[in-house]
Length: 358
Ligand SMILES: [Zn+2]
Image 1 (tube, rainbow, N blue to C red):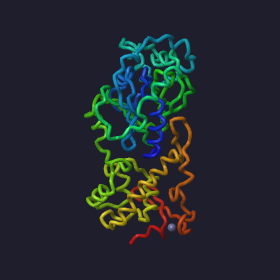
Image 2 (image 1 turned 120 degrees about the vertical axis):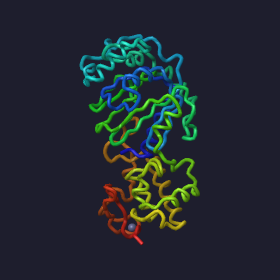
Image 3 (image 1 turned 45 degrees about the vertical axis):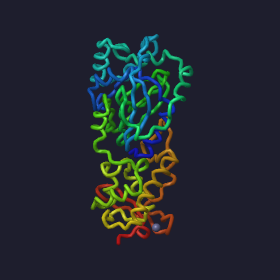
Image 4 (image 1 turned 90 degrees about the horizontal axis):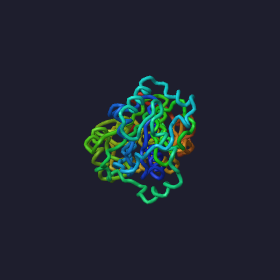
């Protein structure tokens, strides 16, 4: 499952490429991936919106949107000019075919053909290199503290278990698990693939609606979380460390991989209770979390199964994991074999010598 470093890698990749671009169309191959509003409204409302910035909260990718005044231009080509019959048949879910038809009937720009949304027509008609320069002028690094006031609302994506978000030229080969295609005005598209179908897309109109989506997301461990704030956060809890750190309401962005890695770095047993930690141990845990996450980002994420970056490339952090899925191998510090136990239903990896239970 993508955790903070994987989502941040995708965010950084996309921020360079899509900031300043406008959505020109939506094609839903599995309408169930749209959490809100309805799939029909999603496909109708997103086209014409411009991406002002790509941000992140926890494991959520957040596209801050402006209303575009120019994106919904005329479609110079018909989808039928390009899409081979086999590609049109890729819209194989009866519900999504119905949506496309509905959307076409709405008459709003961008106009739609019966099976292939206008998106493809618009995006294929625009010369990609001519518009690539404008995104360079935009701030690439968006801080989470910037969240707020997006005139066009927000597109939010949570990849969950097996979701991937790929930035590819329009008309690229389609993965068998492609669920949604979001066309951009520079001849590229965002392809949302998801084998297990747990990932979700949200389109919300304002900050209040965004806050609803993010209601259960706790503080960010890398931005705006001081050492003192972490001490305060921990001191209010009496819970075992592994399940506590997995709880997104307590701290955002950590999952099974980085919790195990952080606890190993901190030399703390995953079953230690948060209210038994000394100030020194809390400091070590803070450093362990930050170091594990930063190493993950520096290595463009951990690919153990599904995760890929926005270019479809695997990360490298799996080669640098200290304990996660290293059971039986010698601890990098003391050579004791790494142990694996189950805590709260999750496989948990630790060194019995370096991380003793008191
Ligand atoms: Zn050890």
